[in-house]
Image (cartoon, rainbow, N blue to C red; front, side, top):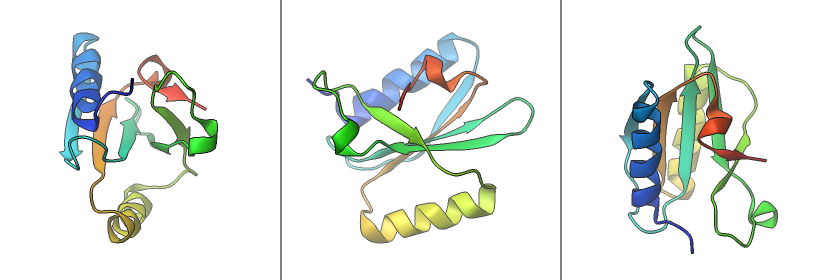
Amino acid sequence: MRLTSEIFAAVLTRRVFADGGFAAVVRRGAEAAGAVFVTVRGREGSLRFYAPAPQTLAEPDGERRFTLEPEGDDEALEARLRREARFDPDFWVIDIETDTPERYLAIV
């Protein structure tokens, strides 16, 4: 069974905080099924953006999977999120600071 977006966001932020990192929900979307995007900021200032993986890459276990989007800066990220909002305004954005996102996200 897949966790709701709200529970996934709560679990992710708590796990990051428990490991001494920082996490914040930047945008709240639909509680049950909003798409979740994750921005990862490294300690050296790098920025990575993870989007939901296509359904064709989904596993039957219901775990959320993410794909790394092409590199960009804050301006490119904002443009990407504006485009997403026009398509589907019910998405979440979670910002985490860590050097090991694979510890928290299932990345494909």
